[in-house]
Length: 156
Image 1 (tube, rainbow, N blue to C red):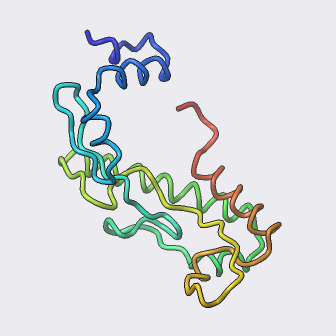
Image 2 (image 1 turned 180 degrees about the horizontal axis):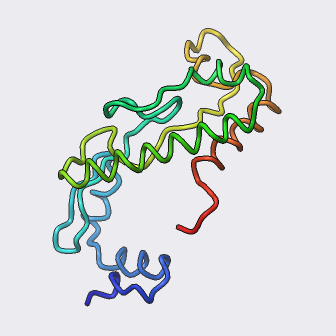
């Protein structure tokens, strides 16, 4: 059995061992958003370009939530936590279903571009609807709630 597959190792030990086995070219290939597979090590292709700002429906049917600025208008951290949980659950389900069919295309990965915690200070930017607004305190509280909802409380 390859050392990086040994379940008695910690995740950090397995990751370090696997990274040590990669050539420089293979390591560089994993820096792309559409990382190539490395069959000799059992590493599948992976596309980390995914967006979960207000749901994960770009990969098909999913729960959609209002734009971030609309969710911020609720001032409800518990609601944002719940939205983060739902988004993460649906993203994991979509990822596993796509992976089962060998689909490693865009919007199928587990890396979600969310939340956007940029402070919206200048309307010329044109993407203010993707933020929680201009208030740093509100943005921080809502961002923390969303992230904790996405990460969950259980073991990895």
